[in-house]
Every structure is written in structure tokens, then in C-alpha cells.
Length: 449
Image (cartoon, rainbow, N blue to C red; front, side, top):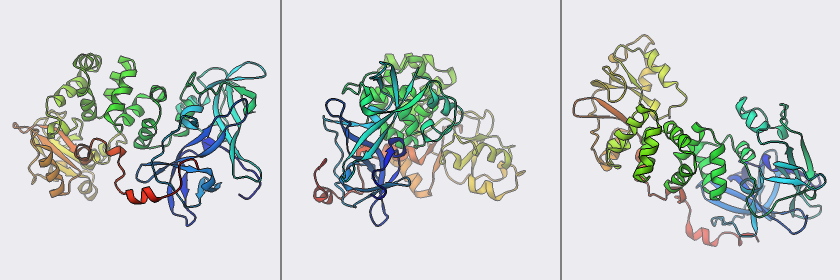
């Protein structure tokens, strides 16, 4: 690498892209793998955990990294695409070292690890952790306040915010306490490092952490963020995380989830736990959960959400667009509005029809939505089986569809992502759909070589 022996703070490597020599993106950096050494010798940086576009995580040895600069990693292009498996002697920097409580050797003070820097050794291709950025004082420091003030710059990334405790950078040998046990570890720095990730990507990060670390990160997320992440996790992880939350908070998180996802999760809990959580929820939310759980899982009623955009016939295009602009709605749920007679919460009065988002964009703001109805398609019955629902979506190129009962009331709406979630294999998050296994076996050298 040009420029001598560069030093890089690991927070700058989170989620950056890795490229091959031709400029094609290989994947994104999700963690760093180091090997702790005896005494106070700095850990050796073995390589990077890179997530491919297929969501598979692979190990990229530092011997195959030719450059780290301008927010990108350049590789030799030679990859071993076997799934990364952590060895007993290895530690993950983001997952296991950040937020750890360690001790300053000189003063005996306890400090919290906010960041680490890695440096390439002179005249060699080896890298090691050389410095530790720490904060004195309590846990409620600048990272949490930065997020609360609107995600200001982190203090070691140039932010100028106030600090709850003195922060300083010391040599690796100046601290002790990086033991192999997970003790005294919070989640602030890890969350700040990955705060820009989409919920699905953050869920993938959590899925690959240890159960203890996963619980710490989940506890540090706010309710809405945790709800979004839970919706993207495998069922086993959902149950594990929910079980480690205090019951009042677990009920709050369930309320923040999409009703259909929350109902699916509740259905997997023991009856006693399910009833206790339902009793802690707001009555309206609990009623929605019970209504959804009354349907078989793989039916339209079991797939639907009870919170589509419902408008009365006298609403205008301007009213509809104001509702569609709600940033909390998924794109599929915001793709259309459902016009019904009062009451306008599910189950509604008589369902009249649907108005698609594109139609709303073509008509004047004062136009009544009742004059724009698409009422040609027969809505789905709540007992319609999954294959029938999937066929409906495929036949009519739908991204969302109404579910209406025998009396003509709108019960909810199904979105295409819910259909896909239930049609894919249970382990689809662990499956690489585009990876050639023959190529996988032949590609690259052994992990850690």
C-alpha cells in the first residue's frame, strides 16, 4: 500500500464495499476477525468478514486485501466463498470487542471501548490492532445522545458534540480486560457502527452474533427499530430475543410490529406466555392479534395486516396522498388505498373498491376517491389458501390485495412480501440462491491461510 503504514479506525470499515481489481463489487464488510495474543501483544488482524450479494458471509484474509482507502476495500479478486465459521481462537471486533469494559493499566480506571484502530506493519502484509479509543465514566455517553439528537457525527468521526466523560486514545498495551469471556459489554458502539443498515441487514448482523451479544444489542435498540429487525429474523431468533426482554417491553415491541408479523410470533409462544403478553398490550392491538391468530397461518386471513390505508368515499385524492406519504408504511402497503363506508378501521363498513397510487397521481387533488375506484377484481376471502393467494398476485400483477368477509367488510390487506415470506423455505435467510456449489468447493484457499 502506498503511503507507508496506514492506520484505520474500525468504525470506518463497517458496511463499506469490497471490490475486485476490475472495480466489480464483491460484497460489504460486516466485521473484522482478530486473534488475541498472550501478554499485552496487540492482536493480529486475520481478515474481514464480507457479506456477498447472496447474503452469504465469507472470510477475506488480509493477505488478499491490497488497499483500504476512501471508504472502500480493494481485494486481489481471489475469494474463498465457503461460509465463514469462527474458530475458537478468533474474535470478532464489532461483535465481541466494541463496548467492552476494560481497565487502564496506569490508573486502574474502568473505561468503555468505543473504537479500535488497525495498522499495517512496516514492510509486511500483516495488520494488527495498535490503539484503543475509550471513554471514561458511565454508559450514557455521546453515542446514545447523538442518536437521540438526530444521528450527529460520532465523536471519533469528527463530531463536536458534548461528552459525558473524557475520551482518549491509548496504546493496546495501556489497557487490560480483553478477556475471552463476554463480560461488561454494552451495545452502544456496535449500534452506532451499523446505525445506517436496513432492518434486514441489521437482522443479519444480529443473527450471526452470540446469544448473549444478540440480547445486549436487542436491549439497546429502541422499540420501533427492534420491531423492524424482529420482523426480518428467523423464528428461533425472534422467540429467543422476545423471551429475554422484560414482559412490558416485549408487549410494546409486539405493538410496534406489523400486526401479521406480531401475530405469527405470538402464535409460536406457549399459551401462558401468549396470554400474558396480550394482557399487557393495548386493548385494540390485542384484539387485532386475536383476530389474526383465529385464522390458519397459510390463509389470506393469516397473511393479512389489519392496518391498510382505509378512506371513506368522500375523501379526496389530496387526503389519500397525505396518508400514502406516511414514512412508516411499507412501499407495498402504500401502493393503494381501500375505500369503505364507516367505520373506517378494520373490520370496516362495506368495502367499495381500491384506488391505486398511480391513479392518485393522475387526478386533481380535489377529486373524490369514490370516483376512481377499481372494483373489477373480486377481493380475497379470508379462508383462501396460500396457493390461491399467490395465484391471485401473479395473475393480476398485484403488490397488495384486499381481504373481505362474507358481509362485505374489509378485514385487512395482504402484501406481496408476506406471500413470499410464507412461500419460501423456512431457512431461506440461510440459503444462497445464486451460488454455484461446485465453484464454491473449488474457489480459494483455506480460511485463515
